[in-house]
Structure formats: structure tokens, C-alpha cells
Image (cartoon, rainbow, N blue to C red; front, side):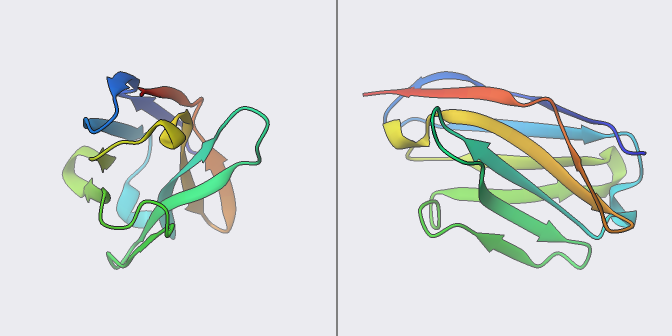
Length: 115
């Protein structure tokens, strides 16, 4: 079992920045991958960014160049730095971990970008 706890969401104006954190209950180096997904009202959950055990990253086209995923193995924490935020980034952001081929999810944190 893996528990994930997100923090750092909130309200920000367009063009601003926010940082999200995801603390895991297990050694994140043991995870196959970790990532961030988001779900806006009336839309399906979509991938935002992922990072593998080896440190390879992948981003949705809509956030490339604006968002950065990183991790601190010593703190068992994954981060998502979001810059140049747009109103269309408004969503609930979920932390995800893949451990032994099973997907685990955090409870989600709301990010709201005002225009």
C-alpha cells in the first residue's frame, strides 16, 4: 500500500506561480513512476507530468515549458512547480504513484487560476 498526501494548491492570478507537493508513505525510489494528473469540472482526468525511477520526465503538451516535475528521494516527496499559470489550468490536481504495477492516488488539491 502507498499513501499519498498532496499540498500546495490554492488561488492564483493568471501568470502567477504555484508549487504542489506530494508526500509518499513509502520510499519513492521504489516506485516505478510518479506523476501529477488533473481533472477539471466536466472533463476527464488527464496526465500533467510524470517522472520515472530513473528520473525521466514526461509532460502534457499543454504544460511543457511552464511546469516542472521533480522529486526529493530523501524526503519521499514529488513536486510540481507551475509557472505562467492560465485559467485553463484550473482543476483538481492528483498525485499518482505506480508501485508494483498498481496505481495509487492522493486525495487531490484544488488549483484555481483567475483571469
